[in-house]
Length: 500
Image (cartoon, rainbow, N blue to C red; front, side, top):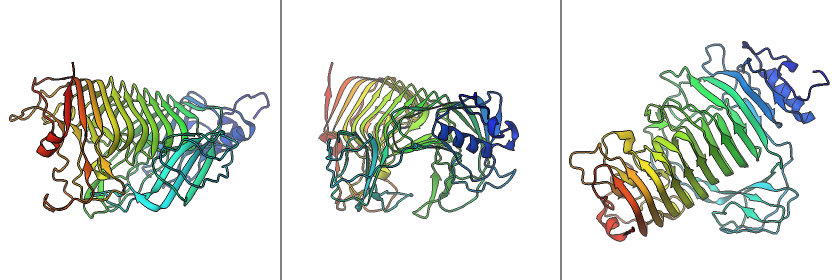
């Protein structure tokens, strides 16, 4: 490398960019040098960097401009065995050391603590005293430790609603937030999909970009997936952000993965979720103008999943779905988006807002039944359009919930307390012959396939119904007025207010 360089290139460290040679060792060395000298990295626009099969991870801690460079990831093992399919290819990391932090306790919605960290930091806490999100169904499990993430400011103030009560911590990690944003720009990545055969259980692949540095933006990255066959195992997420804050994916192109099945925890076949975008324990997660093709292709899985996030915002995105598996709190906003066959899924609490968007799922919003169909807070639907089931013949349920009160999810479950519909057009023109109009709510007691216990048995974990629905403008292509629910008790218990 010559002294006049103000940036680092992969070629400085021996990369060829010919699409054949394994360039990952040179890429790792280039980023290591850039990190130690505080220099950005820029790639050759016409290069094709092959990332090989070795268990190496390039650590990125400075701005990186991949512009129109192409990257090949061959997971097919046709040209050689992947050494470690769980290893990431790139890891976006902070060079700041974790902070020693002491907290005595936390209470729900607490806004201030006595601690005064040297840096604003992302804090992750867990308590083994209680297990939550005790999943029901084919992927049933014993839940996860109670967990929260939040931003702790230097003055002791908290950003990110605390969801649970803590009197002690089995895990407490504080990672400083870099003041300057790190930007990954461009890059065209192609993954030749894995062909792993494993009839039982999940065996997730990484071979991805792993992000744990707060204040990071990925702008203009493209990821293609090719070469999928009749067999394969799922991916965790090509862009995978976790345990950090202030993350933005902007102008990115994602590819959904083919649906494969396995034998799940209940001993029965179950589809495996495979993701191109993933976020866990992120405070302030923003996606803007991210897109994919064929959002109503039911042979491919929904493109994104999140868990334990605080404050999610999607703007101007075109995706096959948006999902919050094990909860989001604070604000969950979908704005000017187009969501496909797997629709909009939610679990959590706070304010859920869907505005100026077009949705194509079986339900306008599905509250995940495997986690209790719970949303603690309000829902606002504003100026939206919904084509149920991507236009296939369907009797639409606007809000999908299932919870018969027999399963302990680790927390009390409820429908949204108040729902406001302020402008919604429903294209229900393709409906069954006996159709009498859409339902605002599904029947939460509909057969769930979990067991054959009669509906008359005791329900020790009651499911709190919605209190009221305010409708300012809801029009249907069929011209038929909506019903509240096929469940008579639920229909009688919810106040529906139609406003001019």
